[in-house]
Length: 313
Image 1 (tube, helix red, strand yellow):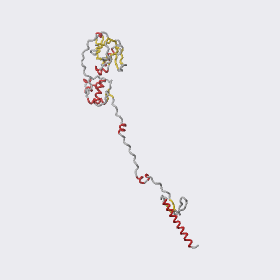
Image 2: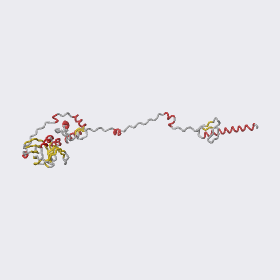
Image 3: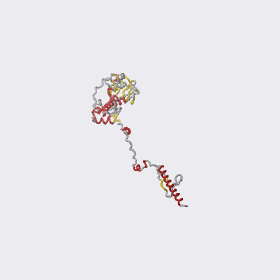
Image 4: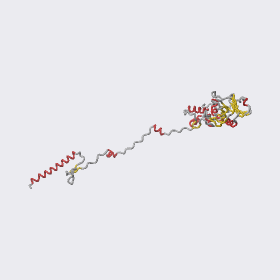
């Protein structure tokens, strides 16, 4: 075969190959350059269609990294958890335990030497203007309430630990004379009513406000008494002890009537804690009140059912 016919064909094939390679490169650029075309040393790789192009298409690179996967993000220290918010003042106040309540030292109805001391101390600072009796009645409760009000304490009328300590700090220990002032001599009771001169008699005088226990005209004991008010007066006349009740409680007024000796319906001679505390500033509901508990207790043991009772002016 002549040389002139062979050389052109070789050049034509070479030119066609160059054109194909250039076209493949253009297509790779047009696809977005997600991968680079590399010539396979073994003579080229196939594309997806299986066409031998002599160019190997590298697989797409890894997916784009998230900010946390980037080297810059990896160099940042891990975020610290936010601090717990401080409690509000209202939350702090709600969680704070309430202070303990003051303990009760003395209250209405109490009796004894400590009550007498309380009254004597209150008397030193002009809150109790009576002789100490040792009984915690309404007068004492009012005096304690007055003291509490002046010192900015709750006005309960009950002596708690706070009130007691405040009072101790403002007063001196009472003397024996302050606790038990000497008794003022009283004039002797008037001559007994003639109806009291015979037999066993509770001889009760409204004029002298006294009760004399008499047997056959002789006075065995005498004690102070008070009577009912003008709306509930104590009846006058001659009666008999109908029945006795040592620990009686009034069903009408719901008040204690210890050592009661009934002589006219619901009227009786009995001990009165209110009389012991308040004196003659109060009145009974018609009964004959005695304020000396020891004397009335002794009298109760001596008087019999059926003994005479004389109430007179």
